[in-house]
Length: 79
Length: 135
Image 1: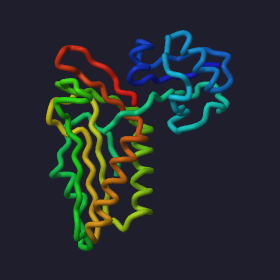
Image 2: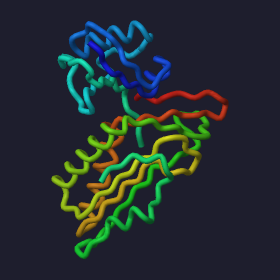
Image 3: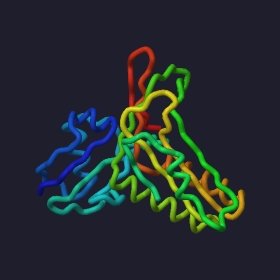
């Protein structure tokens, strides 16, 4: 399946891009993050991140569908 | 209303959105870029946002505040991009019949925005380095 990833803050720096489309066999957000963390050297453990799919917060066990927009959100620091 | 903007925040214009005949109190909070953090000298900040989700989550926070406190209007705007010392990074304004609700709602909104809304700041240090803050 193809997933559309967006990256922000230090994850964007680590990935070297603001977003990418990834072909993957990962079925859920947890498996997809493990794959991308290995590829890009993401330092965050999943417990430190939140997950959003198609513009809404969701959980790590969320089943992914083809063409989903998936975002792994590092701890926020607005304000 | 919660918005993310890459333009300078115009507090005077935003205050006009707080007006109403039942308004007896207006409380505004400005978060500004200061010249230090955690003992390091800072000379600017850069903000990124996941704008779509930031506006959805910010709107949710404002709805929560409206449920909790007897307020008339709530406006919160967060700026993104590169900011200089003294620039307003986030502006929150609340109007209400009475000051208690206005103070409480303003505090609630800014605290929740800082904790929950997907916006990130990168500090630029006077000595040259810079880093994203991920508390």
